[in-house]
Image (tube, rainbow, N blue to C red; front, side):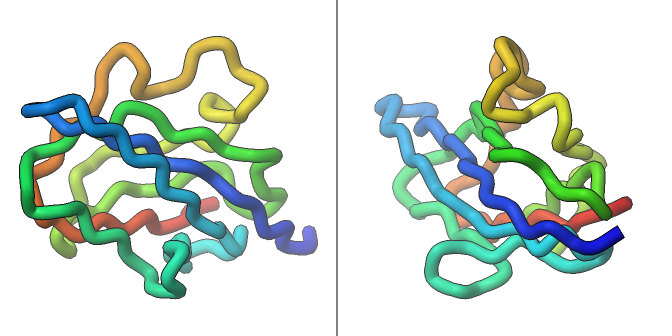
Length: 115
């Protein structure tokens, strides 16, 4: 199939003060490639002011060649796999809404696509 790039929004919430950040990323739909952050980098750096929770991942449409993404924090795999179909913007309940993923302050986040 032909790769179909798509967008997704990652929602982080600060543990201390509840600060919410919506970060949009572009996903190329190519296996082993990383999602691209708004500044053009292949990673997202969280602010160093507090620890955060990855509270939601909202995938718009999804790709045709990849079905999930692996979450890396500070270049280490977390073992967390984001299922694109479970996190579509049309879903009533998405993967991390009930069980957010804690991430340390200042961490580098990467999302690696997989078929």
